[in-house]
Length: 215
Image 1: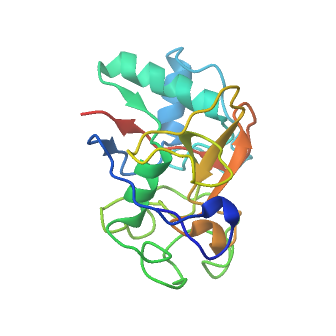
Image 2: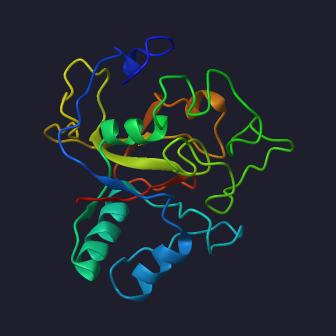
């Protein structure tokens, strides 16, 4: 997990042994799924789609706390425990069995993901989930489309983070990790090891999530 090439906050490359099994969503949560939560009273925020359309596009314009409200609603509705993936779980899933820079190999390949510079012409907007080929685990849009919230507090490196696959927590944590990059990012952000941060109560038009269900 991690990378040693670009940024201090992605270092060091290290081994993580994920302690418990998990099921991760094949696709990002969509506007349709989110709007059902709003309509049924589980979510209070109806995100702005910026006039681009809702439906099967990944839900964006949500913050970390919004995502957890959806997960609480979904858990109650289904009787199963849903949550955000930990950063380690997310990277394991994103790599799809690879150790390369991107899920598909060492270099950028056109038309494998939705990002700035990934396609001709550049879309600059989210597209319906599942439009691009899946990774080795059959997961769609682990690189690009919407950036994805994970459970972890932000850390400036991995030197003090868990090695058992659980999420990193810290007292007074205000910044949370996002993974995968988005339609508004260049390919650096789509690397399997790429990570960045936002405050947990800040919404942005590129940020969404996918679910994990515990066995």
